[in-house]
Length: 220
Ligand code: DC
Image (tube, rainbow, N blue to C red):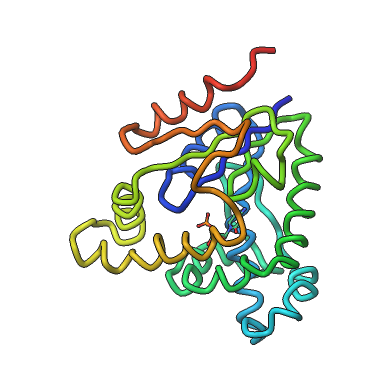
């Protein structure tokens, strides 16, 4: 049926929008960022964060169960539910050390492409940083979701800390801007390449952003 690929920096709203679309359509939903976060947990536990040369093989053997139900995004390493752990600022601060290792990306991109191939017929929404360009450049809909730096910081602070006062914004700064700087060394997600539609969500609410993406779905 359809593959919808949504890239964007942190705080752009892509997870909420992607999940909402998948839920309504009854499609699968793949959060590729969660896979990189799980890989960071796995690597940290193996004491391998400072040994990029062993990371690809380590990530290949990670017993990850990737959730595809937009209504149930619990994620497991073996029998352990790591859903909450991967959202902590501890893991957010580590993840770029894994996600910027190119051979690690090759391992996870291959896995993501396999998942997309398996769910293409039924419909899938995939979000990340390199979905429109590397994972699924042939997706039916390719969107780069952006928002102003201030809006992204405010959203992330509200998300993580429940408030957006000066202290909350300062505490979230590393997670948004430093991480985006590091991540953009390996994936281009700040400007839309040809064929990818940029949507600026700074002034849009969730529903308006969902509608802006759905307006791009080809009528069959
Ligand atoms: O979307 P997120 O914040 O949960 O992503 C976690 C990290 O994974 C982020 O620092 C960038 C990285 N990432 C990536 O490099 N490529 C993707 N397709 C998705 C995420």
